[in-house]
Length: 408
Image 1 (cartoon, rainbow, N blue to C red):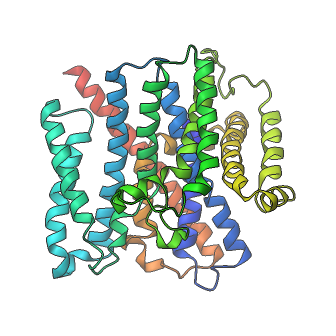
Image 2 (cartoon, rainbow, N blue to C red):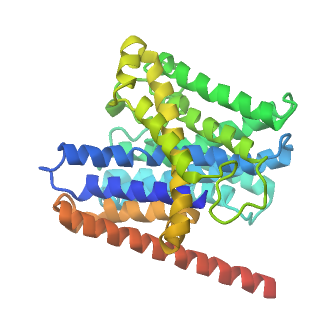
């Protein structure tokens, strides 16, 4: 699972660096669009893996204490997503240099600090203190972000729902579903079926929800449900629950099935699969069948446009499953490369935040939209290698701190 998440990090870096570093003349070319297609696997994979991880760690009938822990984890992912956006607006977009932005910063920064205090684990305060800090921080932040439209320096970046916000919302919804479903389903097999059907329901409902007015919900709340406009460019809801929750539920269904897998698997063995190469070929066949620009899917969507979200759900979920087969083979024949990818996967949140600054932030300004394909390829490989080194350094620090705690 770490390696699959690490592979998602790799394709994320491929797309973000291509988008940020390649010259304007290259944008829109067939090769650039292929890079966009590769990068498109990252976000669905992260959402799918979030559901998978949650299912693997959640018993059939979770207690409220376990559910609360899951909600705190979801809240932490949300907070990190908004903290990165606040940093980007303040530093990368230069809001701190504008006098008109200072009142917003004076409210948003302390509110963000309160939310970090409330959701960070391990807890450093009582439950009551964390609850008060979280409620106050959220209230101030929501109120502040609702009044940024007239500010300079690209204020829409503050409240835009990117992948971390989408993962956080989907994790929260799935955690609550686990708590509710666990009270009525008799077995983990039944839970897997229910989660799979819910994933399908989300995909089927998406065309009927997108573009529909969600008044009287506040805009920032409605964004979490679905895009309130049919034009993605005009909406901040890039990763709303419809359709993205479907990917998390799909991953959760697979994770529930995997809970029954043997615990004594050999290295690089895929659960329930004896020959990973057969799994890879089978997934490749499904991908060809449901690919939107392939030979089969267009004929389906031409007759039933409402099937498009379902095909995407199957496409990206199948890609995640197939990548497990590919990585199983990679681990057997190229162990150092596999280990590097898995290392990034274990520190995916760190990799996400750090690489964005190097691609789109101030650190990436000297090469922004100035590279050709050759220079981009070199830079992308170097950035990926630096992310592996950063992840390994973070793991070493965590291990050292853990040993020091045990010694104390």
